[in-house]
Amino acid sequence: MPEPIARSGNRTIEGGLRERSKARKLGNIRRAARELFVEKGYDATTTRAIAKRAGVGLGTLFTYAADKRDLLFLIFNDELIDLAGQAFGKSPSAPALADRLVAVFHDFYAYFARQPNLARFLLRELTFYTHGPEAHRFQAHRDQIVAGVTALVARARADGIIAMAGDDTLVARAIFDIYTAEVRRWLAGDRSEPNLAQGLTALRRVLQVLVDGLQPRR
Image 1: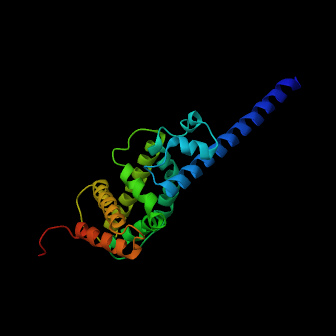
Image 2: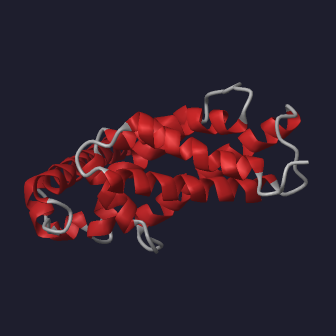
Image 3: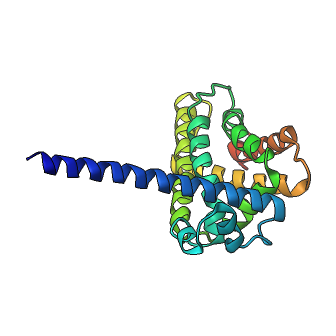
């Protein structure tokens, strides 16, 4: 009777070792990709070079990412998901919706400002990024942001600082589109160190246009 218990224990130990080995390889791949993208640039870096620096075979590399673009998002996805949770965990109470939105998007701008070159590659490569394991995770992150903005819009309407008869999610999608366009413009404007305050000021101005609407004042 004790023998099955021992075998079960061995399977548990083996499973734990296997998971630790996978986590170690994933960490090595993520670290190697980040280092090489910074050193050589995204375009000049090859998947073979990443696999070599990570100490894994090319076949093993492709069990964690479908291609080089997937590897780029492998670097960012966990951090972006955590960042969104942190940003939308706030409860900004400014009297203007644009200020509440900027308070949330500040965290994303600050994150990109710390690594502008990698951020530029990320924003460039996400166009039509729909396939690969990390693509689905990034899309979930995007939906996470839209859901967070939807909650901010609904709260602003409940607080009486905006008046609208439309769909909160549709408004949130418009806000998200403005954010993605403005963050690209901001990063493209200064090729060295983008100015965080200037970027957020520009974002707020465009968001205010949306909040005010284009109807003539009575």
